[in-house]
Picture 1 (spheres, rainbow, N blue to C red):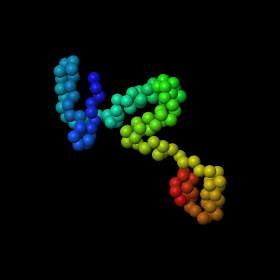
Picture 2: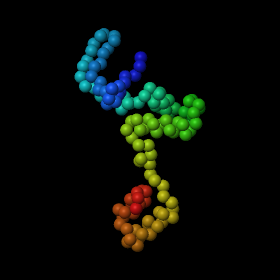
Picture 3: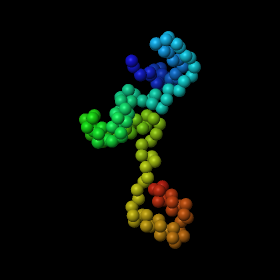
Picture 4: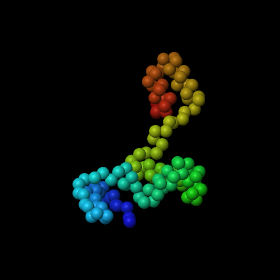
Length: 127
């Protein structure tokens, strides 16, 4: 059995699931159904997700099981994250140097910046 296509072969728009069929009892249900979050993943991406879950998210175990390097596994994980509609690393905190952190705290202490600005800067937002 093949996975259902998710994109129209003519215009590339997202396809809607409108019919479900039971091959056991021959029941057919028609309507508009949601295909789920994983509906946009390719078969290869789905297999990667299943391996990721089976390996409990441990990339070192995935390296052994798939025979791939850490950077390759990380790239494939990022592809899956993007296919699910997210941007990898977007929510990761940006690290700033201790020197920059001290400078921000000194500016706050001297009244040069507000507490809100200091918080934003310490979280890695642009000045």
